[in-house]
Image (cartoon, rainbow, N blue to C red; front, side, top):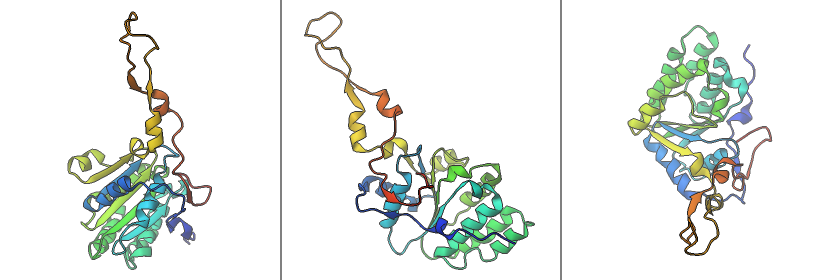
Length: 245
């Protein structure tokens, strides 16, 4: 007997009114409609999930967005694919209806299961986005082959959005070369105040004409600002304490 699903994993986070808007990044995520994969990759605390929630709130109503918050227990293929298909069904009823029995039988290859999902997605008239949050928690050999199969065969109106702390084992180079990849990195997620602090005057104080100096200061990138703690000023959204960005 299959274990019951935690339905709250399928709920996208809600935004707080105090959120600092980042329209430039939301606009970049909007270009995901022209690509197979949108990748938001940065360490913890950079506001990845917050950014996705902001983008989601501005998503046109004619687009369907399926959300799945992952945790370590989803690294088992049966659990992972059941949640993924259920997330799709939450916004497009009927998608993967024949795939779930195949998955639960544990006899059909994952490619067979996903082929039925892909065929169902191909009949959806509007754009559909599947958001996988905290994907690094499940990115292992048991999941990678099926994800690559799914990603490389997505129909034109289906798009994958992955939030992760480290790059997933997916064909990123091939997707990037073909223009099928939108990327948001840690450098993009840094707040403007942090970027301003990342420059500092490093030339020694001296008067013009002093030996070894020119009497002017030089501006360089401060290593501490890039290697220190990530900014947290924009990470203000509501979700359970166990979730991480």
